[in-house]
Image (cartoon, rainbow, N blue to C red; front, side):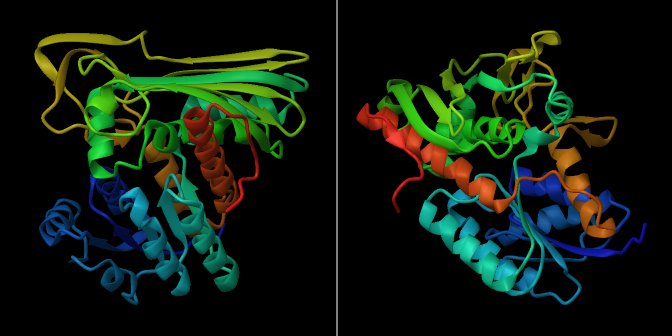
Length: 360
């Protein structure tokens, strides 16, 4: 298999951008690494940690470097469109964090640029790269469940992480920022079977009292094109000391010839420590009881990062270096995911059934 060396720019030096950069720095195909952030000091600090070749407080400066031929966009969700479109205009392949954007207008601007430039773009739905969900996809490829007629997915987390996300962007609600993972998983498992209707209900309380419009709990019923019915639920308002360090979830698929249940709550590996266990996502926050393995992105162990985000990052760099298969979410599917979650929020707000596609 032919291999090539890569020059990589990581745009955004927050938690996920930092992980991408540290993983890229260790990848054998990466010969040049550039890092940017709107906070130049943070970009400089990450560059020092990773041994990056260049850093800047200007995203466009790192993308335009002649050594750079691929870009990770890890900016806040509402800032994706500008950086993604700029990289595509430069002819550079992009992996952008999920969701593709927070509005359909921004998503369509990205897709329009992609079509015009004939570029390469994938979206970082890292749950696809968790081993249990990779195994599940393999079973779906073998059609072992027969025709899937229904399913469910629900995800829980503590309000400590939700407030951290909402403080960064009040529009990045648990539905748009988290439940989108499970819309993507279900559409991936039932590939080609598009959502056509959403019904949803939400309950306000903790977040409303803090000045945010997000619901504490949202439950939705999503009907797919062939009539399959999927129940989706999210609560990121559990007490701050709840033991999950990222996501505790459960996914079920019901078919005419089989059933698949994926218990991803992580209650099988519990740690209690009176010293406290630091939360990977929320600086300064710790818990005494933790579900180990629940960190959404993965975990550090023995000096390396392991888990879904590491698998996803390495798979993308492998794809760029060798041309091998990439299971990453397409931008077209990412738009469907965004449209579906926007419809869930609209259904919860209005109490009405919302048909898809949405009018823009």
